[in-house]
Image (tube, rainbow, N blue to C red):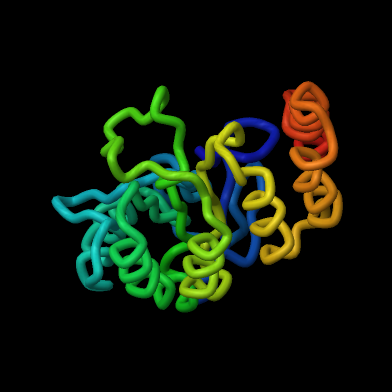
Length: 212
């Protein structure tokens, strides 16, 4: 049985080397190797800190590969490596260790979960290391990643957070980067309630950023 976008049913998959070149429903073409079981698209994990006894919070790419291998053995074909709150030197070293795996296609990207989180929602993150997203620090990590940082968890209510989000969007060449740059000025030129309205209109459930 094959998992298709429209449902699950009998089907076939044609493979050439390591690539899937065709899929179809119903009986397999003549000469096909018949097998029983399930075939599904690879799983995609966009928030993972490690696995197989290894962590992505490392300065050693081989340790990260151990975690990757554990997930690939269980059907995960695309993975974003999540880091946790740390000092700037530690995070920089970890990003430098992982960015090569993004460049090689082994990782789909790097996720910064912290250090720009709200203390109220810190979870297991060490509160003494939580901080506001200073522009110099944001730029340093983006520079270290050279485009490999694909996701950031950030508390928008922290001072300078909106400006940091605008910077990330601009550096990531997001389609709403210019709009985010405008939003970054709101704390300077408008009352707080307008800032809140801007965030809702952009990032809310029906916000502009969620329409694409």
